[in-house]
Length: 519
Image 1 (cartoon, one colour):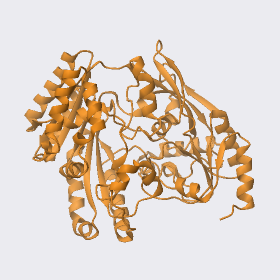
Image 2 (image 1 turned 135 degrees about the vertical axis):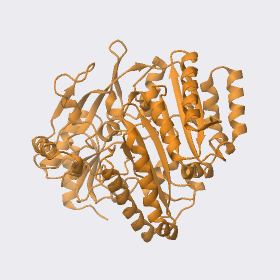
Image 3 (image 1 turned 45 degrees about the vertical axis):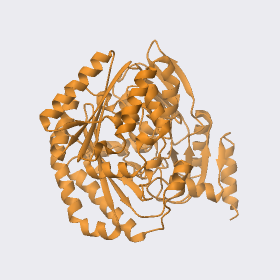
Image 4 (image 1 turned 90 degrees about the vertical axis):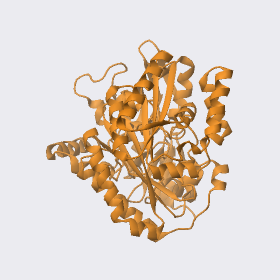
């Protein structure tokens, strides 16, 4: 299909910024997708090389009346960048991926927003440094700018909290094309926390251009343990006590359904690359060989009798300190009624922290949609009971349409516990999913046809789970266009949010619809 005169004019105007501009139909279709769904048609995709090109292209787009949308690694599944109205200009920041400054004296690092967590980790590791929360499981693709916009968890989270808690300063490109610096390199806050306005905003207030994060020294010693539980209440009790005791760097868990899904996939222990990575991580040839043999022998069967599984990773300045933290975790688990099993999963995953993103389809080619909430420890068990009842009420329809689920749990330092039910259903993939997975793995996974009845059921189930989280007062990452953020605000706080939006984006052209602010 030939581009219209208006399309060519827009592309030419945007290109005057110096940024790369894409407007062919296949590219626009690709960028209109996130992992969960497709948004409205885009007018153009802009790929700036630095903050000045970013700012100039934003000004060109908004001056022409087009909405502008930030996209990091594209790993959103909550409508973080998919649009409800046509003709937005999407900004792909993947070319802005440089580590700009590492200050090992003042302990901060400054990066461009398109730098991935995996890139930053690789840059800092030879220096013995890292950020406190140092990446997501999707960190091979997920960007640091995306993490600041969406907020996120995983590596370092049980001790250090969420991604935005590691942030010290930002350079933000506003809707009028100006650049705003907020925060300081070494301290937060200094006066009212204006930096915080631009964190976890899902790009509603501005596009992150540069990010400054706090640094800490990498822990030289690690230890690992895995446990099995027969009931969810015991799992939650142990997880919460481990967080309160401050003994884990990461603490996460799977329900029996998610355990089963993991065991249906290729075994972690059979993946030669990951096994080699784990053996190298152990330090010393003999120790590495011994640990590799243990993991290989455990294979897929170490969780065959596990109902719920809990995985704990500890780190410290000395091996004795890390081992003592794991010993304390064993005592907590024993008191809660759990039992220790082979620690294959934490060893493998820690040695390969940013693995390929092949789990965005289920083992039979099913689509995947996580829905999460963060709950205080004292409310998690009641919520999980209500969630189980909710799935029970829809069991017949789920069976009819082949929809199933599994649950991930993760403990957040100082922030409660994340509960993430993941829906799986038979349906066609999309271009973003197919491009994200490793080609060899994608070739082994069945290709499914479009399934409208299953998709419609999943959308109803997802909204019901979102509403249930809201009923129990949960908070969320990746608010996007999915979670009921504004419904949770005091009316005066909501009015303040809208006033800030009007001040920074009077034409409402910066990612309109995000955070639940009408487009």
